[in-house]
Amino acid sequence: MASTVSSDARVDVAASPPRPNVIEVRDLTRRFGEFTAVDGISFDVREGEVFAFLGPNGAGKSTTINMLCTLARPTSGHASVAGFDVAARPKAVRRHIGLVFQEPTLDDQLTAQENLRFHAVLYRIPSDEVNERVARVLDLVDLSDRRYDRVSEFSGGMARRLEIARALMHVPGVLFLDEPTIGLDPQTRALMWEDVLRLREEANVTVFLTTHYMDEAEYADRIAIIDHGAIVAIDTPQALKATIGADTVDLQTTDDVAAVAAARRNGYRVEAGADGVRVFVEHGETAVAPLIAAVGVPVLHVHVHQPTLDDVFLHYTGREIRESHAEAMSPRVRAFTRARRR
Image (cartoon, rainbow, N blue to C red; front, side, top):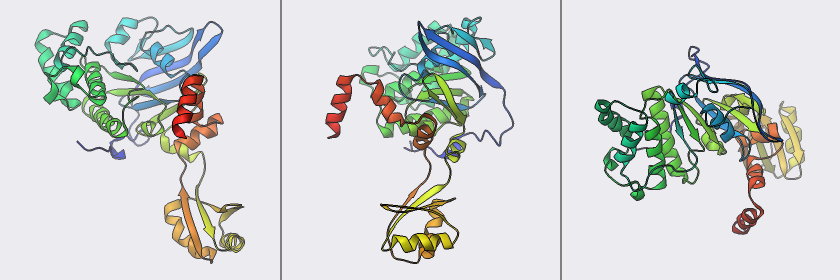
């Protein structure tokens, strides 16, 4: 299996004909006493879409998923999943969704097949369909050859993929993934996402995920940035990054003053700083060669920066998501993390 996922696997939401909404949320709020965990959020998720909730720990991501999956009742507002009101028709919602929790929920003393068969019993899947469904979902997550192995023998990534397979046993229309790759190494995370995108294509499953990993959010067709229980921005990854502005090219030259003057004469937007020259351009990588020619002095160092989701999060919230994650840690964990970085 390849270790990377092509961006071509993403659904082009803008170019495709509009699909019906499978999730509709209006003014959804959840309070715990005086604390508001989710604060009047509204959004839609279309059929076949990969939709990401991006935010730090404590932002309200898991609380939102719990309400959409009928594990928590909204304090106010409205939400429907697969056409069913989450408060009024919880059983109908559960029949149409699959859910992978943050914490492992497999029985590690059972085999992969036994875990899936137990799920089939809970969801009353007809006995004559069970074998076919087990084979299909194991194939989707590339675990067919581990069918008879105990989960205790699985790596963390394999167990996570089996949990996704289990969530698909009853053929849900919507798959909820709550921080699905926590604790997995980057290569395993990429492999898992290859499985998720493939099952979206093959099974037409709508995927709703929460994450605080920027690279993971890039797999989504659209991203909602949530902070302190409120959605502060929502759009495609490309459109969100475009709100930040142009690419930048940072130059260090033998004569920065002359370089600034020459670049401005040639129509570039330039800022001079203590560490060199910053030039704002539309397409950073292709702009480097003509820019170097335009400044007219020897260039010692070039760095091209394109807007990232880190920049987007900083733009909309005023801080980096890593800082927010650190704030959610206990003082003891923060101290341990700082010590390891030294």
